[in-house]
Image (cartoon, rainbow, N blue to C red; front, side, top):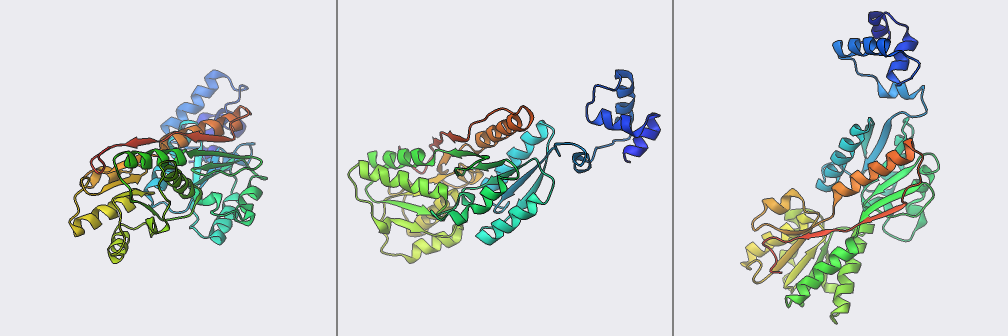
Amino acid sequence: MNIYDIAKLSGVSIATVSRVLNGSPKVSEKTKQKVLAVMEQESYTPNIFARGLTKDSAKTIGIICPEIADDYMARSVSYLEKHLHHYGYGCILGCSGTSLAERESYTKLMLSNRIDTLVFVGSIYAGDSDDPEEVAYIKEAAKKTPVFMINAHLEGENIYCAYADDYKATYELTSSLIRRGKKKILFLYNSTSFSANQKMKGYEAALIDAGYPVKGELKFYTKNDIRYARDMLLMHQNLDFDSVVATEDELAIAVLKYAKVKGIKIPEELSVSGYNNSSLAKCCEPELTSVDSKVAVLCSSTVANMIALLERKEKIEKNLKVPCEIVKRCTTDF
């Protein structure tokens, strides 16, 4: 069923059906209802890509994330799609991988489609160093279409960012452990992205403000895999810590498994906290204290700003920093 079939069944011209689809006021209400009734009867769904060829807006948003299997990415894409659908927009999803070459290549591929704007999900897209070459492709993309970034911060023309206040959340989390008498706080991380760097800075600032030294041996880098991280901790027999601030829930759960193998009581002998407040935090035993990074708020705010920019041509906030919340459960005693 296509627009030609709808026109024939409705007894109107193709142009009239097109006007109905585009919400034109040039069609009488009686004719509009007749066409819509045929569409409903035939379960006709307009092709948003074809419609975009004859309109300024394709009603389509490009979304790029490193990988959809990651819990944070999956939730972000789900929230984005839901809110975009509410406003009548479709989306094209692409998983770019993590290397710079992959990110650049996938961005070019996405821009070859007819999209109204481009959304990058994940702090990896903000780069993990001061090298401008790492973000040059994003600034080039912003010359062609508005660029929105979730959980990342990047200054640039036509670039709009929404990110959690990871620095403050990790500072408060570390400070809470210090107030409970913890002195050997392990910082467990899996990347050097914008978000991870903000978390590390918050951790270090809390230690410094409490008069504690920042020890390199208590900053432990590992892959974001529960069993792998557990085994890495077990291999480092001289690693001495009484609490853990992890940048991902998976890493924190790896610590819980490490503690079970070692016979360490949680939270009496070891306090553990994760990040992102994923479903894993409630599924593990004991349930995990975790930072809620407000991904739902980031996504809904991004879409609302996007619609304001695209449809109402309003000036919107370039950088939106959202406060986090520490969700206290059974793995900490504060």
